[in-house]
Image 1: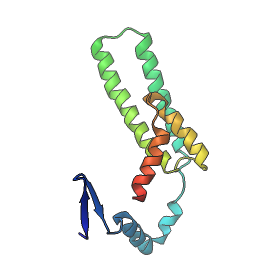
Image 2: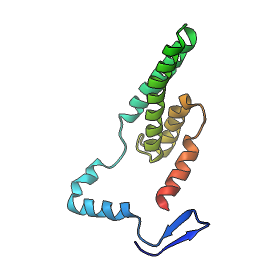
Image 3: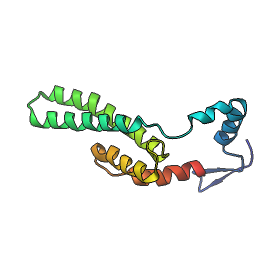
Image 4: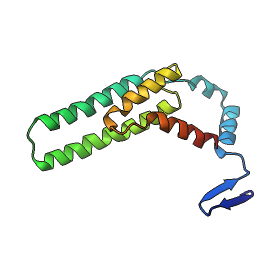
Length: 135
């Protein structure tokens, strides 16, 4: 590994090129047809709509019907946690502007995907996540 320095004992700094950049160049050089796969995925918005709908419908169903505590916990954990995790992954893709044609549309879809998660983070996540990739 190249020159590495530590600051405050918890941050690692390196002068080497970020490894994903070199790997991407190498792959594109060998397989230029991969560039045809670049761009946004038009199906993502429909998947987000489905996931948010299932998440909200499940929450309403649990809130408006009587259930045993075991049913409540199992449904919350299996469906709620699965939907939440999926939405976290969708928000990651949306942060890279890979779900809709424009930045504004991606931002709005990210906020919509964030709705069942309650704590608003999609817009701030994008800023810091893209900083993470840049640095």
